Length: 272
Image (cartoon, rainbow, N blue to C red):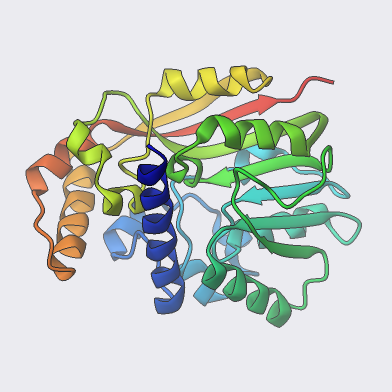
């Protein structure tokens, strides 16, 4: 099992390292990008185009977070940094926004973008979200955008989030969950872990893990299922990606997989 988890971690890092190098998103076609367009244009007006085009997301956790000036915000799996940059604007010069990412190429890109933007209240740290390089009780808000599904040890992610949050702090997550179990052969496909498919778990299990880590007021604020058209678009993209690497794929099977997936917006709190 440990070897399987190591394989999955490597697959995820390889996938997102490649995306960082190629300056593209995991949802790279115009149609896919339109499907997940969940940020207000006015919010994005201060973000460089190359950061926006590299954004990998399945929602907008900032819309749930209710971030206030002066707060400390931590983004789990910050990628190219877009949510961190948006959070930095909300917390202002008296606050701070941290990004944690396990992919060196993403951290380097995000740091470079922060320098170009002249931001002094952001910091990107290299590390796994299961073992965050942060002190306990430091964050007022933790956000994450389509990342926790990539972890092979989700209970540990939630325990770490609980450790890093201040008492009374808020967790605001956009993530992929399952409304129906995936076939076992898809769960063992490393490339599908990197595609935010194979690592997704049942919604009820996800919520139970949050409770198990100590969180209260756990709630699904919104659940969005894929239409048939959207599922076909994503399935076709995965099929094309796998074939480009000389690997076989089955668009029909992938279509069924995406029909098992929901994009959830979830909130929870650490008790005071």
